[in-house]
Image 1 (cartoon, rainbow over the protein chains, first blue to last red):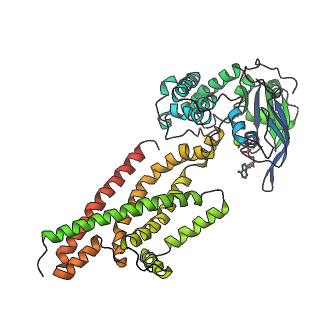
Image 2 (image 1 turned 60 degrees about the vertical axis):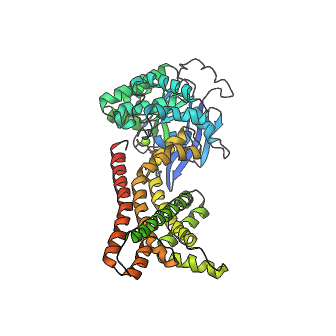
Image 3 (image 1 turned 90 degrees about the vertical axis):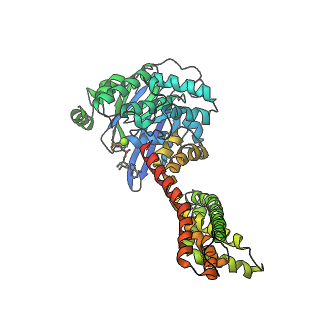
Length: 261
Length: 217
Ligand SMILES: Nc1ncnc2c1ncn2[C@@H]1O[C@H](COP(=O)(O)OP(=O)(O)OP(=O)(O)O)[C@@H](O)[C@H]1O
Ligand SMILES: [Mg+2]
């Protein structure tokens, strides 16, 4: 865990008590009925780090991400995100979500709104931003994901890759301190996947703190400052990207062996 | 005695207006009440949800005719001497419509994928904002066609209001027939009026459905 370098400078305006690490899970336990899905998960993500969670289907990767954004309750353990105590009964969920952006495999754009309106909705609703200002912000966010020309289209008029990039732009427009990505390219063909990965690579380069779940091992090697390998609800191994080349456990070794595409 | 005249026609035309008025009352009143019931039906509060379920079940399980009788005579039992026919019919049809519109709209709201709620939640929108800015606009698209379809049902069901003494289109036809006994002519004209009210609604419903299917989802 110590092997990871802090890639990004301190982002301005993020000075409060959220000294590193930005995200910390400690002994998180979560069951669905009788099935233990997270069995004592602990990891930390520093500001500017790109943590990549890998692991077999059903190992609890999505559940871990969802717990971080308070979309799932968990029975035990603590999660701190940007100064919010997610395990706390009195958690201010909306405050948490202003600091955390999340993008899902199924883009979940709002079909009744144009691309631009999709992005403007949260800034105008949540931050009471004026329309003109929000539109400006939307254009900037769209330019960042390479879709400046699609502002007035509806989601259904876009390809899957474009929709996913709009979803990323929509999250970015809220200026989150951490971005979570759950297999955002799994529904896309290789070419569209590349478009989306390029955007995420750009974010990583700009110093965005990210936690992402992916099956794209090549991409994981390229962007990860830390790899978290999950196995049966546990963090089985974690370390810098180089750990993929020298797996310490036979589970990871098998996963890397079969998981490489 | 006599034959069907322009006076009779005028009498039917006025009654047709009352049918439209009664429909409007039932639709607006039933729409407001039905929307509230639909929200209660999907609320997080178990008691509220239970009340809404029971309400919908009772309304949908009771013939409109009985509902009208209950209101007309029920109010009399409580102590009021007479209930104005318009009031009794208006309340009866409102209650009736609310039970059905609530269920139509609940279905449409719940047909919006849960992931839409979640996406809105993750953007820090309040529950109210999620509902009004994300869910309802989508539910509205789905609801338009069945709602207009139900509006046509209300138009036709207003004919039952005659049982509480309200003179709407069907009742007006009956009254004229009692005096001149030309049932065929009279009820053809009555049917014509109903058709003139309902057909544009059906057309509208169908065009809406087509439009909404083509455009965004
Ligand atoms: N809402 C739910 N109700 C019941 N069980 C669930 C629920 N969500 C997930 N699970 C179960 O929890 C386990 C972990 O699921 P999770 O989605 O976190 O896995 P994952 O690592 O993301 O897998 P994948 O790579 O397939 O996305 C699985 O066994 C899954 O069946
Ligand atoms: Mg998953």
